[in-house]
Image (cartoon, rainbow, N blue to C red; front, side, top):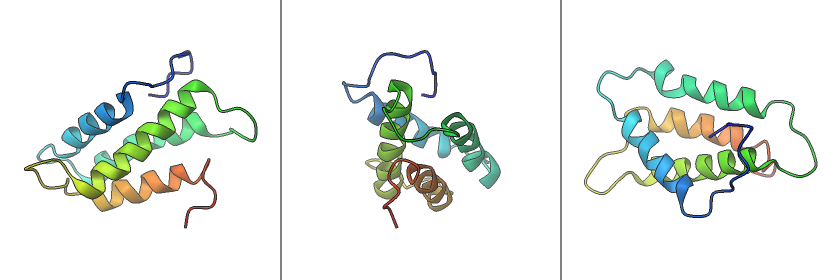
Amino acid sequence: MTAAQSDYRYAQLEDARLARALLRILQAPGLNLEQATGWLNVVAEALDGGGPGPVPVWAFNTFATLQSLHLHLARGLVDEDIPPHAEAVAARTADILRLPYYWLA
């Protein structure tokens, strides 16, 4: 998702499929809060230092995936509960999404 070498912009719902996969991982038994949210530090570090101007393709894909993940965390999957740490992951995801969407509350 944060591969800077990518020049392919998600166009076939890859963001939603990645979000679904992430949600499944977040439902793993025994996953603690640090594990559930810690991987987002890698994402935040990859985006650190970005500023005004064109959004690189990899960053666009990352933001699209995080938006989709946020929706998946709020709604869950059919016939499955939301992950145990959904609220914390959603909050951390929203923090990262404030980088391009500074107007979010």
